[in-house]
Image (cartoon, rainbow, N blue to C red):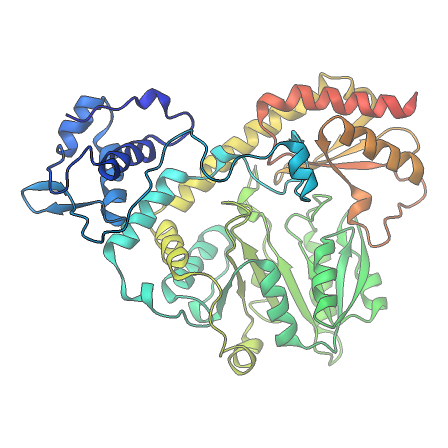
Length: 485
């Protein structure tokens, strides 16, 4: 009977470690070609693990061609007649590529990530649904659908677009058809497609402060962008009218990075701007983290309020699943369906077919909804813990929390006066303590604050483990004190 030291797996999922152990025995010749493996139930009882764990390991070995299953006979090691030598995997041992020291990484230009990252570029490992995602992907491969070996259509596979349409109706009250949805490899790719649809001769507007990468992406497409200030109600419509913009990019449900939720009155005022005169005006509604609202339902979308006209709705799975999940989508208004077919219909969808089929099934079978519920619960707990840690620390005496109870970031407004020199000194002092942060100024068009406005840190805690809260907040307070001495 097969026996392995499962306690040595470290942080590796149990089924994956078991799969590697059996695979290594096959490659090393410890399990002879053609020999029969224990049944799933027998091996599970021997190793004191669940049958599902053994099943997942066996499925992985089947997919990679190490074993085969025979109906009513069991699992057998496949004979290797290729004559190609295989180097066995050795868990925990160094292979040809050895880990570099921090000095070596710096020498080749690779930066070592900071111990505490408050910029929100990544997510914590435990936040990704590894088990259910892997199970779904294996099921897709096992079913071997014909789409796996075919080039995907320009808008993406219909099963994924249909699943997204159902999800939007359930979570955002958006009633749309799969034909209006376009899937692409991340929001950055889709921004370029939007410029292709609308044209480079239009003037694009963005919120200030706001998502500065939008400006760079649109400029790189050859179009001009103007910054429009926001206030406590959202984007200022008077400034938008004065700018002469034809297209506006905004996040009304949860503005990034201030967290402002645009009021219904301001949203209706914006729609009036869109309908005014005979001008052809467009909205790009970025609903980037709508599923992660921690209390209550998100506010109605501009797309729904305007009944699918003039609004290009955009969302991504980067916040809900992982930034590495380069899958985003657009919902096109009626006016752009024909334009899309004419200008972009010849493209091949840039998202791999396997990922599309996996995500479609992940949504359809309810795993995505369950993941969102777990993410919201974890977000509420982390937010409560972090806010409590700040209020019990020295930081509460030198800063004020400004949070809107939505998403995974809030603002920390510092007391006192900081000019540009003091701001740069504070940035260096914080970095020297191993903390990566961004100021609200970093999201402004010209990085200048209004007179009397406090220096503000954007506290994006999606990549900060709760066990590090106290130490990080203590170091942050210490850095601020060092500048104020």
